[in-house]
Length: 356
Image (cartoon, rainbow, N blue to C red):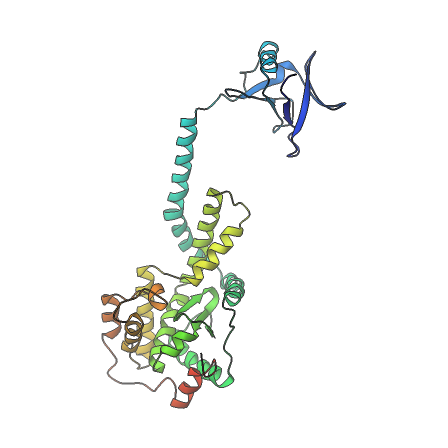
């Protein structure tokens, strides 16, 4: 009994085990039903391996395929089909060529990831309308709040103090999109910004700050990322990267890309140039208010500690000697008004309750 032939009709993914009849043409049958009739002159060889033959037909649906494993079937096809190698046929490809083409394709994708997407992200971020940035920020905001299950800190007095601090900073920052800072409960000392003016301060970082100038410096730095649209740039870059990485590993649904983007924002690590620009923005804002930026450097150095651990804020905003020196240079000669009163600072420190 001949080995069964396998037929794909080109309209669905169903696999048909079929019987073949060689008469005036090749008749393909399943049970008592005729599925297709292929004229011998229209049959083309798609692939001939050591044990199987794959056939197509120029007058059949483009994706229709017939796979033959039986030697007698294969010999009959070679004898009866005069145009196996005519246009429409595909010659067997060596495994070496397949590997070479695959490696070349991966190389092209990696080049796009490392070089093409960042260039594209810069161009799109610069041209994107504010409305789109707000919408994207809101979408990612829902995911961020879901990750930090402890929720936002909303003590009214602390929230009022935070608003006062943000208003003072915005008077010099002049952000096109008004900033929307929020304190989230977390054991990680960190702060980061999303597209659309959303700035997050994690409660452990707030607990480690010792003065309004330290926290003001952190916020001013994050406002710099907002002003330069670094969050939008990263969203576009990592979203595109996520889709390409998904394509490499067979995820064409986009779900992997979404996870890739959310994780990237929870571990935001901007480029050295972006960090330096955000520092410069913070210096302009704080010095414009007559307040020092040396406290921000002190906070970063304190979080780093003697072991210079790379965690939390230092993981996302690594402190270099150059950055520390820049934050300590050219402090304002005339000191401006304090950013918060003692009572306001106390209220802000307790925005999450007595135990942030």
